[in-house]
Image (cartoon, rainbow, N blue to C red):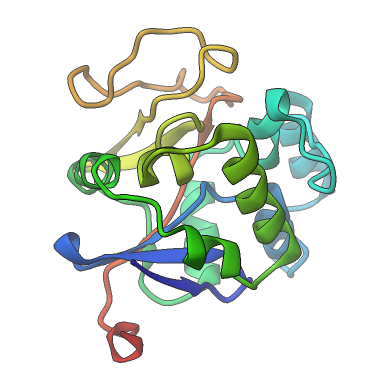
Length: 210
């Protein structure tokens, strides 16, 4: 497994079968806060609306029962795409097919413990990785990356956006199976605390680093 950092110091992993770089974790509030600190249309009132639905918690002492609050949720796909454009060229939301293939591949992918423990990047990223290793005790990369046990993630389905994921029951009680069931839809024009996202990068710009 090849592990690098994005421009903010958060891990991205290369999935060779798909020729795709993927955010190892769902995008965090800390990452998104760097974005909204820049001059753009996202301001304090916008973020207050989000935080009223998805409470912010400290990353310095990550409690296992509120781990999902570290990630930015209660946002719309257009807002996720604005972050992707800001983060760097060619970052995007995954398609439904890409997400499903990532999920299947990472369920079979063993943990590269040494690479994960040796990762040096943003302190928040390091803290979250360490907390997952100690609290979740993942057995594969799907659990490590919180594709399983994370939030519902926005993905592209044609010209629409839908949600895929397999959250913990204590976060979202349902029997949703992202490999078999139809994707989830967020209520129209309503923010949902369950919907976050991760990014992919399909470009060749990182291939020279491999």
